[in-house]
Image 1 (cartoon, rainbow, N blue to C red):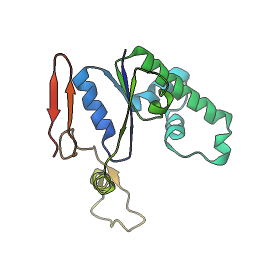
Image 2 (cartoon, rainbow, N blue to C red; image 1 turned 135 degrees about the horizontal axis):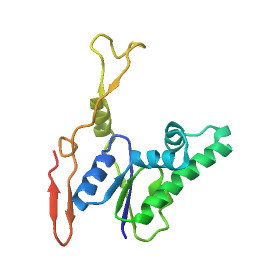
Image 3 (tube, rainbow, N blue to C red; image 1 turned 90 degrees about the horizontal axis):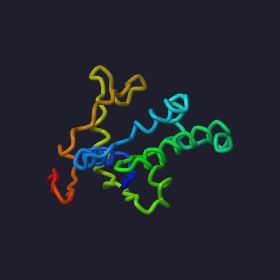
Image 4 (cartoon, helix red, strand yellow; image 1 turned 120 degrees about the vertical axis):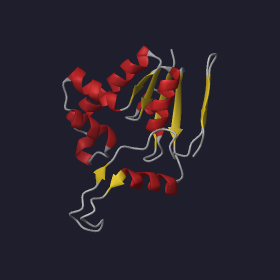
Length: 169
């Protein structure tokens, strides 16, 4: 029973690396699915669960029973996915929550700040009719580039049956 728990800096493509690793190994992948499964299982609003795992809490929220409940729902879901094994879990505190489990490989994905900034700015498409400085300009988020297309990473997976390498762009 093996688990990979990935944490990432914004724009580092940790999710894409995890997704590709999942495909190569044939393991379950969970990122946004963690929140969706927690919301479904515990009957909570997905937006609230997402918020408590990704935003800095206010002083009041740190002591709120509802915040603690939401975090418990997400934590329970992460432990359920980990118990199944053969899973790649990205974000939502999975690497921290699973730190005491010996068969969890915890990975931190990062990239140089200029590269991350360029990647994030490439994900945003600004309407031609407005300027970026205008308060009425609303960015439209586009899909991130596909794995292997100018994301600047190289990895190799070795197992008894396969070896695969993705070239760095």
